[in-house]
Image 1 (cartoon, rainbow, N blue to C red):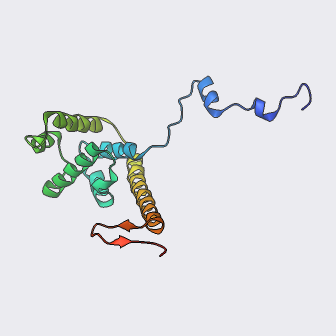
Image 2 (image 1 turned 90 degrees about the horizontal axis):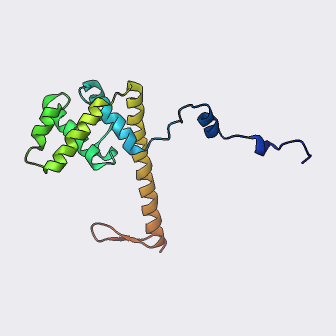
Image 3 (image 1 turned 90 degrees about the vertical axis):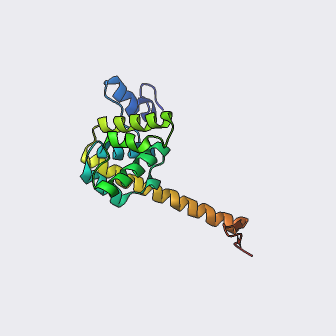
Length: 168
């Protein structure tokens, strides 16, 4: 390199440092399944029946990685089956009374209230529903591949006691 000239690498500045220098907000990171589940629940609560119907058609409780989120979705599903509408907070409290500890009840009601207070655009809701579907499918694919490798390498005993082996 000649004197008086700077190399490209020394003159490049990261995008993050430019955003910081200009006082711009940082770009959001890629959401994980828990964050997508929060968006879905926030879209449904407190009373978006259309979004609940969409979620019930496309998702199961297994799509929700967090136990509290999974249980809230299950409660929403059960209530919708019985009444055809979105579970209101007062009925959630009725469902929980005597079935869970006071601490768990408080966790569910506070989570419900937080999701109900968080506004979500319809586009974000629909995106998160599809992301939850894709993330669960990726997880299932990974599990299937891991199981196949285990069978090929060491063999595996299934639930019935039968041993599955790969190359004999």
